[in-house]
Image (cartoon, rainbow, N blue to C red; front, side):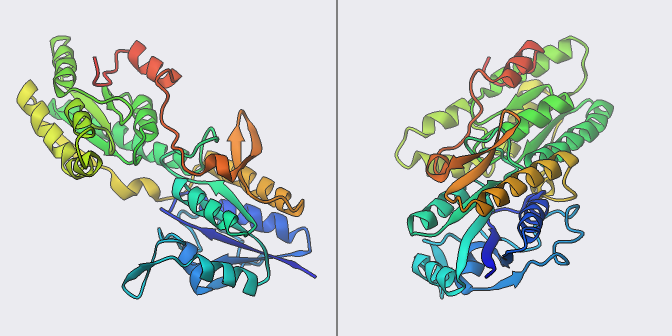
Length: 357
């Protein structure tokens, strides 16, 4: 009797999701004794029991497509909006899992998905996960698929902004995504030749940034590119974190941080300053070859583990190898940029200002 495996994509859409779905599906389908169904719109589809069969024809021609053919949502099994209320729908999800006679469930997602998948594993379900996120903040994997494509898009934006910055002798600030970590800003900033890179891991001083820009002006350089991560905070904002409700206060401040930073730098330097907030364009488009290869490798190895009836793991990329990592190790922690990371050393050695000194 054919074994039935479910698969879903949860959280923000990311380039590489479709190639990962394809890899899991084709590997299992070629084993002859598996049937794969895809739940629509993440955990909500699993709760509402909405799914499609992912046969070979369905999986054909999707490797180049961005986003996810299954749809996604940020709904959590234990905190799901239902009828105007937030309810714990874990029991309904468990019931649907058994009603469909699933052998297991594959969940593709970032840090939140890893936590939610672990909760389902604790509820008795067979679960496997794959790490996807443009933020690159999932623990125990060197890189998550989606990051390379987003970094390429952000780098191209830096490249293009050089033209107008140099033509008009401006300061151009580019805000990247990245949630609470700075991997995307650091990677695209270095690759694009940014002069200042501001990261959540290193609280910055506006005066230090202004001094770095003025130093460039004295050296005859007529423009500056500043790449700032969406979660980067100033040293004054870092102090607010210690206050009562500090986290909420800082999150509110971040909503207007980049325009205010531009105004402050214009005041301190006398240079015309413009802001570009890259936003969701970083999530879109065709995945890079690297992301396709990474997601394909993770997906096929995931399917091989399923064929061995191994569950409760996230497939991770570590030191050029695909390895299973227990979900309990992945759920919860965030992968921040280490203070001694080689890219930070490279930035400082080249004179890139990180806002701290």
